[in-house]
Length: 276
Image (cartoon, rainbow, N blue to C red):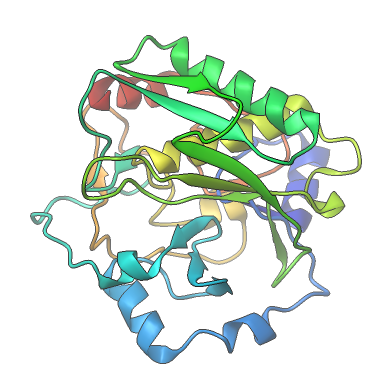
């Protein structure tokens, strides 16, 4: 998830709708030219073939950060989509082809080497999911969780700051195994708000179990700026039956945040209950 800083500030002043999703924050004085040069054309072709935008791609170790908060591994880039041709979503809830399998199931979550607020936020996010009484449950453990939440420190880049990142379920039906949360003070401030951090972790868990951004087709809905389509969904952008086909300003899976605490709205709960 990322946050557009200038757009977020404007929304707060105007008390307009808040939007959560891509976890970065805007700072016009920074650029991402250096990180972009680290991504080869071949890698960008592979990213595009999977249905992701190749705009503002960043390399993180051996992985690649796309669409603000999605980490793609070399194994992901080697995958070939086997999904059928399905209707692409506009701004409603939708999922990837791969989902968590072997339900009912409990997914463990752990937090490593992060300030207490991140542990408390993860615990609160897990409680929010479990309160829905899904067949997919979550349980906090002290270490070695199936989803491990770790930290990184990165300032603004290209007008945004990344709040957190994660990935999608594996083809074998396991959740994505890692959520990275930004500990840079420009992400959450020197005294992070518990509800805000909770909502970001809640969003990233959504990716881990197979949800894509609600405003995938036009990220400007939550991020501001010009129309930005994340690209055709080669790995699956499948509309979840029962969710709206118009803009859903309250969804927990919107691409950008304005700094507020966002939990599941009614349509999000329909989507989660349909899948899990």
